[in-house]
Image (cartoon, rainbow, N blue to C red):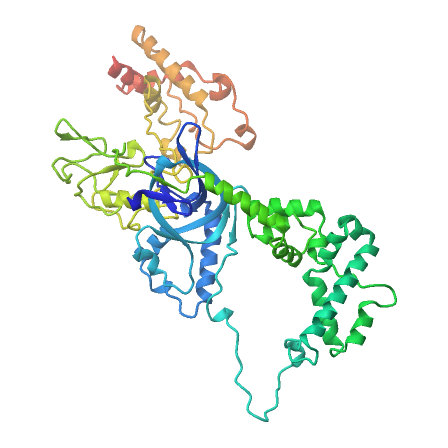
Length: 572
């Protein structure tokens, strides 16, 4: 029951496709729609296979720098299989939200910020455990280091010097040390200090009455007195006492100098109403990510000013009112939802039909699908499994066993790294993330399957191979694919040979001396002829006699048939 109960803040698997790996999301809200269905507003996490190769290289460089900063790097001792599986455990946080049906939840998982003090192998020892260290922006296609890094380790510890012995001189630079701002053992009593603070508040109220901008922001006396009672006025009064060695008369004269009373204002008074509204909007969008708030909403404010305003804003009635509204909204929303275990058969499951195992992916027969004509698992190469699942494009006919299929769905890759080619064939081609490019299931990593084609030669082409054997050398033409071939001359040669063959059957040819043919047309022509080919048989072959084309007389004398005659006789 508890395993099927999902609450806000849980990390869960979502299934959006029966063949693709699960999506990893964090539940932020559970809302009930008008139709009665439950939708989950979730934060998106991305795998390595979901981002570009250039960003993967940046992530690997960042991981390498973190490894070099460690005193005892442990990743160098990892095997290839462990490194391969660790890549499947790495995720990338994003600020992107989306709404998904709660019925698509397929289980819980655990996602944690990469802990530098913990062994990397601890993530492999735990089932359904992932880690992240970088933030991915899917719109800008950028990777940034997460600002929620926990600063633990020797790099973030203070160097405590040894205690000085009695009478030993202090060689430290005292100007770089802390400055004392208040002495709790001062000669003044608590009553005298409180009286001085009351005078400082009264001076602050009078100073706001004289200031035009303050009178506009605090039009009433109560608002001016409340602003003068803030911490900035008390800090100024106590600092004044300390600088004058706790002499009340000297400190009072400083509070009201010759030019008029001193006005001390903090960030709450410095900010305008429009700036405060923009800050609340930015805080709703980014949370306490003050760098992004300053970059996108308040670039004219310093980071110190924004942080100081945030902690002062938390003491106002505005913050309390917003907190109550959010609490009321949270009461009306769902806090948890029960999703039953999904037990419907997967469409990729290779089922048994009519007592025989379906041969869609080459599965064998028997209670355990063995190697009886079937393919091995593409990940572990086993030939036996209680159930097989088709994996990749159907024409590839690849399959995974039960354990490798669950690993693929949860971790988005194959369990085993790439191996040497198997005796029965070649191993699938691997991508940079150890996922076969031909059937990884991802639209970014999968490629369109190349279809086989067949060039079927017609009779004219077959005849040209025999008749024009001395005009074009096929091997030479294949080795020089960019040299143009005069196809028009070949066609003219074949047509003339076919006409001669038909005429030679009806009447004998005249006896003429044998003339020799021109050199092969594959010989590279002059540069001026490469761009434009001649048109017509005379421009391509030159002026040749009728018997020069047919060569029937020399062949008749020698007692041999011409190649064209021999070819047509064979066809007939």
